[in-house]
Length: 330
Image (tube, rainbow, N blue to C red):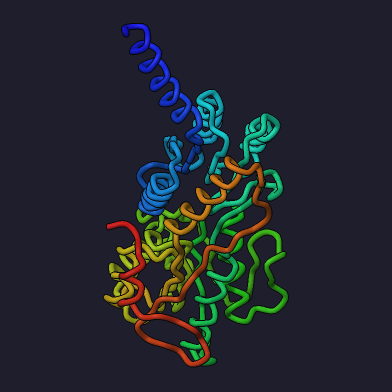
């Protein structure tokens, strides 16, 4: 009787152990743990992993640009048995050797939000079409000015980042600058752009960049910003200079704070992206690979919508009510 009981207990333990072992392990590595965009991305991945029955491991760089932290995270996740790693690269070029090592070991690697360089260093990219996001706010700005003269300041990300380049160039293309398209390398320029400065996507740095631009050219009347924190900084600088009412600010992101700034008139329009959807679709693709061995490949567009309460003819948009229903962050 005791022997039979032991066999039964052992069998149950073996089945439980097999179930645990069979649970696919998926890793998510974001740029940071504090940015609301990546917080929402993590939530989306956690929700999808729970629905799909996957074990999700998460990690992040200590700050934007922390490549070493992301390399360590890849190594740790491989050691923990991850079959799939989702990553938002802090350094699109420096991370490539670590990604190659993972892929050579049979791990499927999907870039989220930001591509690696080269883009085919990962199996796939799930991201916003950042050129389109820029183009939408460029078209909106063009329609808003109706042919009136403009003096533009662009508050960009930092040198060489593909997302910053795509949004900047998309904005100029949407505004009608000739010869600029999605394949344009580097930050495009135009005679209408009187100041270009790096904001690093940060409110404080965005404020400083705007202050510097105003010193160079106090007649700036259109400001493009890489994201909404930079836009908030730009507005603060403009308000301190008494110029906030005569300047149109357009941006990208669609976080809840940013959409509220659109509603309040701080930002005229923003292009909203969807980190929760980005992560959820990537986890689904990861589960397909874990179960069938079928890899996803290429680029998957996770959508972008122009948000504004002041529609312009010929420019597709949704209002802030829609934006607040689909936003992320606090």
